[in-house]
Amino acid sequence: MNDNLVTLISKLSRYQKKYLNNHLKGGDLDFSGAVILLKIKENLNITPKDIFELGIVEKPSVTKILKKLEELKYIKKSYSTTDKRSYSISITDKGSIRCFSIETVIDELNNVYKKVYSKALYEDLEKILDEVFGKDLI
Image 1: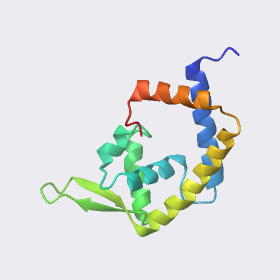
Image 2: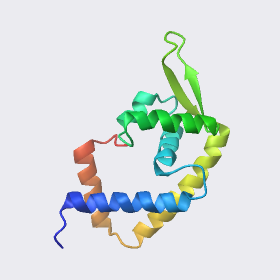
Image 3: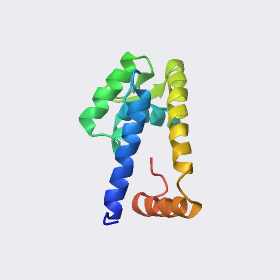
């Protein structure tokens, strides 16, 4: 196999996006929106800047995705009392329910992976990601 590690990881990332988009098809979110919604659920009162810094999508896309999530009533904004331009985001009950269905799709994808990866491969991937991104990766 002539692929280098960067190419292999890129292929894996594309596969994940395609898998999730196909399984979320007919729904109201794509891969990026689904991942951002899960991150909002995991991080109470996260800000748009925090979401951008996760590196899931570019800054203009964060604004667009947050607008869509708010229109779908999956999130709500809480504006700062000191700076009306600043706000944090939290998940709504409806958003929590949607997260459950997204997590189900992710669990299915994990089961696909479990059929093919070894414990050693999993540990090696963890080491690579910890080294490159640090312990608080997404």
